[in-house]
Length: 228
Image (tube, rainbow, N blue to C red; front, side):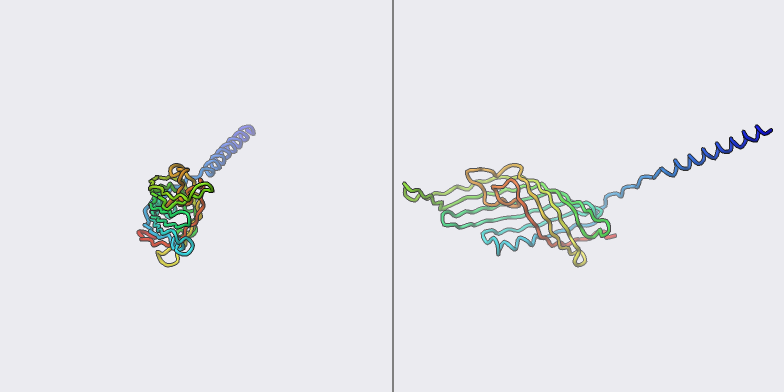
């Protein structure tokens, strides 16, 4: 009789131990969070206002640059940037001219979660420039020969580079943003004729450098589609 009671109690303990263990195992299971589908929220276009400083600090250069980005979930931004550059440099020993365009394609990633209408993040770009340059009235002095003057005919190049950037954008007014970015540009190919290096490659910078640093200052306007 007593052995039967012990078997009964032992069976109950085993049963509830099994239920408890199963409950713990079930509580450890966390249902994976569903990823939010990508949703197009707006188109933003901007102008690089930093280029206007060239009139003061680089009067030999005239350039402008614009940007378009495609907002996906306020997290990912497809980027298209393009611009034009023209240089007319007059020195005592030569006159140099350059004209060209550039195009950049890439993506930005927003690291902010609390303020989704603003941006703080990183970006990647692949850039391409097409330009031509030439030099006239090139004076060559020599101690043993008279002053010699020549010219270098126009040469055309394509240049490719890769960019990594870190930047911020803040909404000043509704749908109006102000932003800046610090950029590292790494030359990939093209535009490296050592006999006649370009003074400045459109969109990239100094033609003799493999790596260039830059800063952009933009003002943007966003065409909203869904701000929720």
